[in-house]
Image (cartoon, rainbow, N blue to C red; front, top):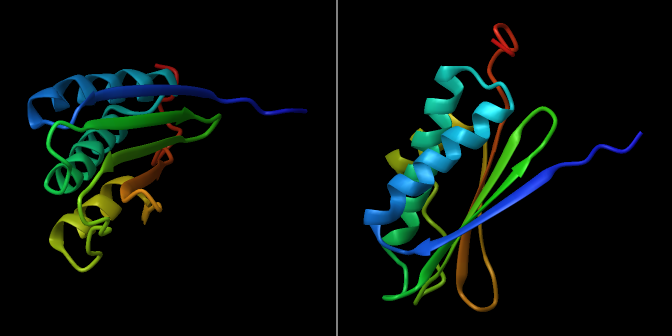
Length: 132
């Protein structure tokens, strides 16, 4: 049996004014997976926090790309932005602690073009109430 997933990619200007679009898309996609309201809100906040961490180092005029992977039992989110310095966010900050508490599995990488990516993998905290 093959398990498939849907992939949704959004590209927005790397400006905080556009993050409300991303928060709405995050909530809508998570609701397709029968996440609880608490899980959806945690994911929305986590995506917002990841974006805030990246926007502070984004190249002026760049786009932020957010890719959602809708898996059978989780949602994966990758937020990527081109940066000047190519530095991954520090894992010793309060923001990183909040991010990992909300999203579960979190990682950050940088590629050879200095694009920094934060990836999140969120599983529902409870299957109780799924499908309601």
